[in-house]
Image 1: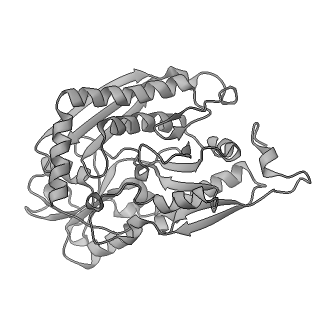
Image 2: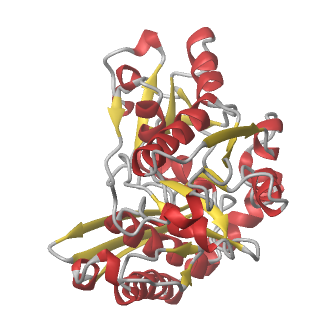
Image 3: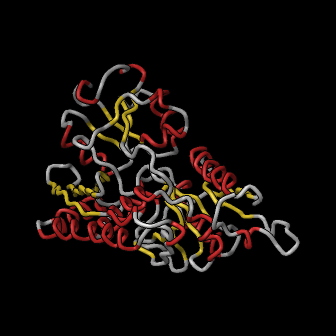
Length: 362
């Protein structure tokens, strides 16, 4: 039995489980796999709790003929799930953290950020190009990606290639790649491919020098009602300290830049020897103009004290990490803000403003 778990919530006076805990998720296969993995972890920790998964479609799932950066609405993959959370139709929701805005609607918080999968992007080649890498593809080969961030970095790194939007879930995009001759390759998150069991389709992992990743990429988040102390306590044991601190820094960086999916912003974080390193960059749409800097901070406090002695209830960039010392979280958040300020002092706002205007005009 695990110490400190909220047994009083899970059982009523007769010792029976008080109610079913309902977990909201998107309907896609990847979303279901991710949600099942979270449910399995909760079941291991709380074997007497009954869990039920509730799947639903979101705006981002329904609009498939428009680039994400052009739809012009935040919370594309989260709004319907949050509506269900607000109406008490579900008790918690599992998201890809990168889909969650840096400012959540009032009344919600991220109660858990799980250990991060590989956050890097991956190249998936058309079968006819098997064995090649991006730099070996013929000139004017078309690469599919729905991300301005990926396109901007890769245009700069591989100027001989052309980039085109491709929408749909992982299954749909792979089908478009394999069954047509439109694309020489597509770029996808390595974490999603691995969770789907499709590692064999990964032709190349893009290193940070080629393409840094999106804020929060590779991490799963559990969103809950901020006032629901019992559920918040229940899921808090899922937090992975290093992932939490990395993602707080990344989200603070993005928030202070006032970035989003309509502008190319990229990050790379590392925790090493009690230091948190954050590299952040902004790009023009074609990648020709960019700013990139790295900063670091000490986070030794994250390892201090027993988790049972820590009860940190302050929300930072949407995250409530109850078992991680507040000092370490504050340092991570400050790191993100300071790096954003550094880039803004060098002209990041101008680069992002032009990128946003050009994207809106496309």
